[in-house]
Amino acid sequence: MTRIVGLPLILVIAAGLVMTGLNGAGAGAWRRRASGLTVIVAVGAFLVPVTAYMAWFHSHYGEWGFNRHGAVWLYGRTAAFADCARIKPAPDLAVLCPKRPPSDPRIASPVYAAMFSKESPFRRIGGIYGPRSNDLARRFLWAAIKAQPGDYLRVVARDTLRAFEPGRSPYPTTWTEAKYHFPKSARRALNSAAAVRQTELAEAYGGATGVTLVVQPYARWVRAYQARLSLPGPALAVLMLIPVVGVAARWRQRRRPGTEAGARGRDGEALTAWLMAGALLVIPAASADYDPRYVLPAIPLACLAAALTLIPRTPAPERPGTEANPH
Image 1: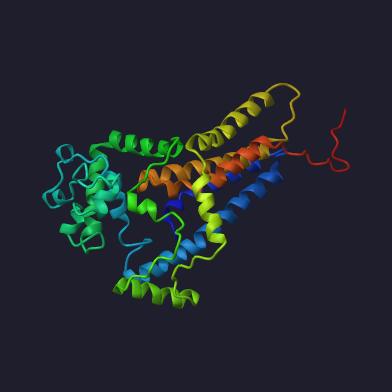
Image 2 (image 1 turned 180 degrees about the horizontal axis):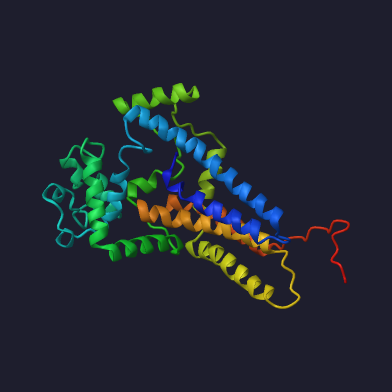
C-alpha cells in the first residue's frame, strides 16, 4: 500500500512457499497440507490490509484502487519509446505525445522529462494531478503499448539491466540524485504553503516538525560511508547468479543415484528470495522508470538468496522409529 510496485510479490511468495513445502525432505500428505495452509495464511495476511484499504478508498473516492493517478506514472514509462507517428493517437490524446530528447541536459530520464520538465505535456492539461490527466494517460499508454509492444519490452529490459552496470550516473536528474546524499548541514525549510502543510502533517503524525537535523559525529560517519562504499552493479550481478548456478548444480547432483534430497527445502527458500529480488528489479522498470534507489530493496534479498544457496542445510536428526525398514 505504501509502494504498490510490491503488490506482485505475493505471487512470488506463494509460489516459493509451495516449492519449499512440496520439495522438502520427506514430503508427504501431511507436509503438503501444511504447505497449503501456509500459502492460505500468507495470502490472507496480504489480502486483509490491502482489501481494507481499497474499501476505504472506494468509500472516499467512489472507485476501487490505491490512488487516483496510477496511470500517469505508467504513461511516463511509455514516454521513453512512444512514437506518435506509429501510435496514431486519437485527437484528444495527441497532446500527450512526448518530446525527445529533453532540452535540459541535466535531465537524463525521458520519463522525468515527460512528467515534470517544462516541456511536460501535462502542463497543458492541468498538471499530472489534473482532473483529466489520469484518464488521458491511461488511454495513451495502452495505445502506445499495443502499437509498440517490442519497444516497450526493449525499454524494460534495458532499464532492468542498468542495475548491473559498473558505474552510477546521476539519474533521473542531477539535482534529484544530489538530494540522496547526506548533507553537511540541515537544509532550511521552505516557507511555501506546501512546506507549511507538510510541517503540520509531520507534527500531527510524529510529534515533531519534520525539519532535518544533522547530529555529529553520526552525520560525519554517514558521509564517510557514502563517499567510499557502494555495491557495484557487477557485484549485484554475481549475487543474482549464485542461486541460479548453485541450485542448478544441486539439482543435477540430486539426480544421481544415492544422492540425498535434504537440501531441496533450502533451494526453495533461495529461489523465493531470488525471485523477489528479481521482481523488485523488473517491476519498477516495467511500471515507472529505472532509478538507483529502486535497486536498494533488491540487494538484501539477493544477498539472502546467495547465502541460502551457499550454506548447506544441516539434516534434521531422525526421529526414533522412523528408520527405513531394511526388509
